Image 1 (tube, helix red, strand yellow):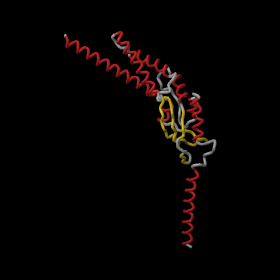
Image 2 (image 1 turned 30 degrees about the horizontal axis):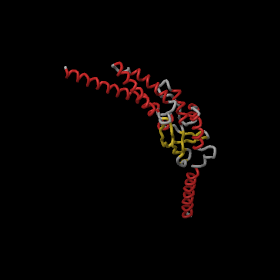
Image 3 (image 1 turned 180 degrees about the horizontal axis):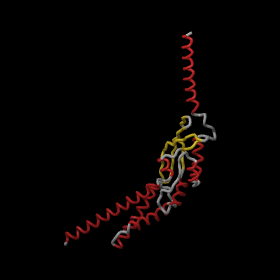
Length: 227
């Protein structure tokens, strides 16, 4: 009788373990369907991005909200260019884990860092020409204004200012649907790395001022030695 009880207990444990394994194997797909899965969720999200409906797109995520980080009068033009330049490609099968999943996605997007660097180069060249004619550089405020003008010009054809990033996008099944989780890496790519533009422009202007200061010191030193 005791042996029978032990055998029954072991049998029950084996059945429980088998059920757990089966649950783990099936839970990955039980919340998936042809119209409700991470890939279709991303396709719907991306359609809104491509149409420039960033508020609607980010409302479809589990935790995201879009905000302007450009700090520029060109914000509307930047957002339009981001939408026009955006494309993506699934580069792997979806890996699902019950109520969560991960999808590798190659995202091509406008890179405002590249565009800002090109704009600064143009603005600095204008400032050097101004200095050559007037004996001094433009003020930082004037250079910043010139950079914004150059950015507006470059936004009309930004195809050579794109970046590609392979991002592991996480999804969560909540309220009966799959939603992408907005990570910092994903947000940066989708916003065109706009949050870094101000720092790039400031660094370039600082370097310009340092170069100008060094040239001035060198000129003064030469004049002093001749005297």
